Image (cartoon, rainbow, N blue to C red; front, side, top):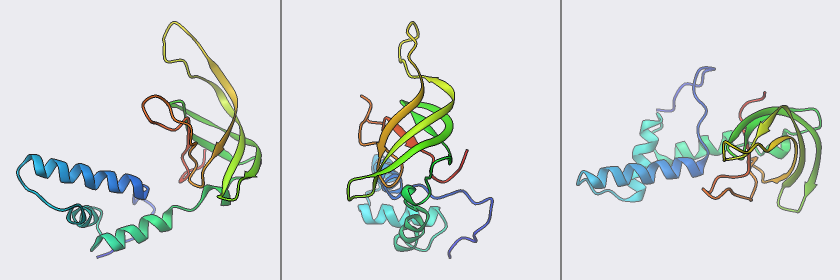
Length: 157
């Protein structure tokens, strides 16, 4: 029951997002008095995505999670979110950082990004340095738990 691969098929979310979806599904069903296990929620979620079971969905999602470090080079176009604001830009510096696959990047945004949360203040950034994990996210988080920088790794700018 594996879905047919096509250019129009949406990319699967990362495994962590799929697991959060299953947890929300389980909570929603519990609110309606339908109690299921976490593994049952994972199985239902897999069927919603067109897979026979969680193992199939897990394998497909893992296969699409190609580490960012294998695709980023100086001059590569990138896009994503920086302090919650969308950006597009170029990689102008890249180096390995640590044995766990982290990368140290220097990015130049095509247009400056205002990262101030208060409307009466501006804090424009056009060039940023950051360290990302193998999936394109910084370990540093904003107060609401979002990564400071997150690359859209499935698409190029």
